[in-house]
Length: 184
Image 1: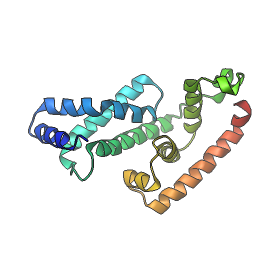
Image 2: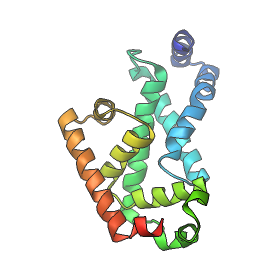
Image 3: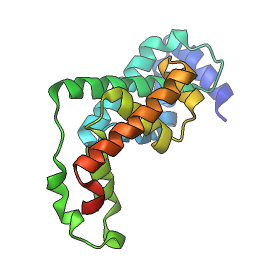
């Protein structure tokens, strides 16, 4: 869609035109914000992740080979930034207990607020290892194929399929342990 415009702006940026990079950021900021929202439900953290994506992209711009859309290249960078974020967060093991969401559990399932349900799901996914969480997020929220996930992460297709199967099993065990279905 923006292929020619992107290439012109990228070349101008590589030649020192900071305004050209600002145009690229403006063009793709909303898509990257939506992607990074998958990695955190906190607005401040999300903004920081988006900024990290565009900083990483800026410093890697000379490696963009224009073999695909610029947004695809940015999405790969964003996925890796989000993955690093989860790995860092996993080290500190900060997540919210599902008991904090008991208010939603006591309401009629037809009236559960979508935002609250998303927060509960995000909390449940936070209990997974970052690799497992990443695969499920890319697969079900970003609707990426196994091949796309493997390409983004530098994994094999067979390895990605195996990781996806194991991640679903781990999520199911966590949900059963937390009596997730009984609560919701």
